[in-house]
Amino acid sequence: MKRSARFFIVLYLLLCGETRAQTLVYSLCYSDTRASRQARFANVSPLPGLRSEEENMAMLRNARKTEIYSVSILDGRRSLLFSDENLHLEIAARASVSGRGKAYAAGVWRERRTTPIPGFYSDEGVYELSLDGSNHFRKIGDAQKQGPGALNPQGTKAAAESADAQSIFIYSVPEWRPLATLDLSKLAQTHCPDCTPASFGWLADGNRVFVDLVVAGEEDDNSAKVDHTGTYILSEDGTDIGAIPPETGAFQVAGYSHPKFIDHRFMGQLPDGRYVFLDYGVKQGKPSGQAEPFLVISGSDVKFQKHIHLNFPVGGYISPSGRYFAYLEQRQTPDYRSETHLWVMDLASGEERELASAPPPNGPNSPNPNMTLFVLGWVDQRESGEVKATQ
Image (cartoon, rainbow, N blue to C red; front, side):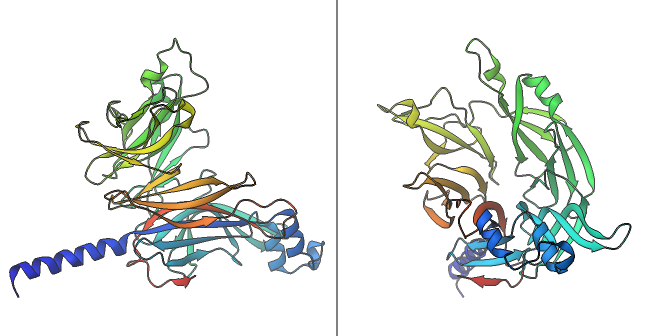
């Protein structure tokens, strides 16, 4: 075989492998309306002692069920990875996903016990879920109201925010062993006493954490507080590394101006070290209230920035390869309700595709439960085993 032919075969296999790995994971949470709950339990006794154990379990749930799906970026094929329907475990709709085919979620295990007092008991904790369609799970940590937080890109550590938002706890995964505590109040006091932490996550190396500091409440025009907002970086042991320079990711789009009342938001880091920001621009001649969203991809040399126009996003998740960006759009319907649409963008070409959606919330008299859609992250299905395909 010729050397050039071998080269293209290897290149093809590499590209195909990368495409197969780009599998987005999201959850759908089904919660009853007043009418749908009444219809669901219409034939169930109002007395706990006259109900079956499963009926009692079902009536204790906050949501009817939560399902976790994957959707292929290549062909749009959707697969059911996990469902807590008919389980004694009720998981939170928001979870953290590992590329190794696992998810980590806060959950509540319920069971009937005869001691010390007969009744139904709840055990809150952090659970590892197998994303292979088996519905296998195991408890790995004690209860945390805030959930397991964010996994690093390597899936080996988790960062979880404390209930008062003043600390970040670092855990090893999957052992869930405490590694460190990062003091966010000290970070804010050092750089911006009038700021509060708005969001956090991991940089691409999986060893450093970023924290966004923003001004709480309305800003005084004569104050210099805004000069100290921004994205700060902490090492895993809590060492303050400093801020991402404010000029990095600064909005520079021809024909647009940057509105003074909006600060760009840090979304994450690509494997090649470039940063990704969400920012807004106003087209020349348009009022400032018609700001349009852009992704800004920037490295240390701000002359080489890339700007990509977006639909209005809520949140965002960068794929491990750095090629794709997934986000949610809240779209208003003609009757002034909001429906959710899941989009993915190819950061190389700027092409966007809609992958899933959830209808607007129903009123209390609707016989149908409500559906809420959340993006959870990315998984490589080549490692997660066989899954149940759905339409």
